[in-house]
Amino acid sequence: DIQMTQSPSTLSASVGDRVTITCRASQSINTWLAWYQQRPGKAPKLLIYKASTLESGVPLRFSGSGSGTEFTLTISSLHPDDFATYYCQQYNDYVPVFGQGTKVDIK
Amino acid sequence: QVQLQESGPGLVKPSETLSLTCIVSGDSISGDFWNWIRQPAGKGPEWIGRIFSSGSTDYSSSLKSRVTISVDTSKNQFSLNLTSVTAADTAVYFCARGGGSLDRWGQGTLVTVSS
Image 1 (cartoon, each protein chain N blue to C red):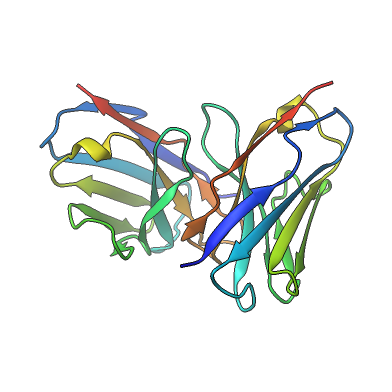
Image 2 (cartoon, rainbow over the protein chains, first blue to last red):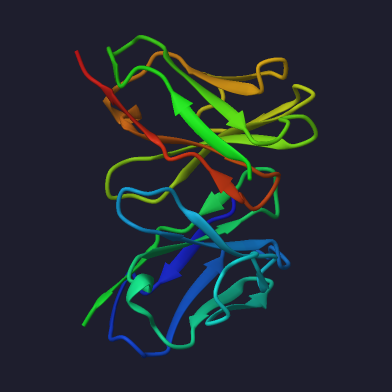
């Protein structure tokens, strides 16, 4: 299976900060990558698919980029609602695989 | 707006079979992929498998020998059976829609494996 590695594991930031999370795949996945936000006790919520396409209703402060093996999720200006855990997920092959997550907490 | 809701026992004994159902409302289950994902406490999600509305399935290689996913289009629901469970199968189990990215999720249900 393709392995997905996120960095950092934890990120401390303040409201208004620009935040970037990185996700690396163990082999090329083209742009078959999604990003999710998960708040405690809730299901993951799809933010971005195909590496850079924003899901309907997701705020424009979220953006994704990358292709091949390296991808980034950027939050341009952190809102209070954005303190959560973020996961990448590849779907290049038939087995979807998630990264281990990046927790964004309050500095 | 499609909604998914998991149902099933919250406690299963070791060596027994975990059975969950996901009821889909707000849209037909036909013509789409439906997934089961689990998440142990403090860890990332793990994909278990998926079924297309026609009945074709894909499973995680690590769970394939113990997993069966089925669909009942007449009831607009799909189900998960996981056999021979151990404590390692304790997790929150989610159902979700999608053939690649997963755009709609149920709220999740905690299943604990314990005697």
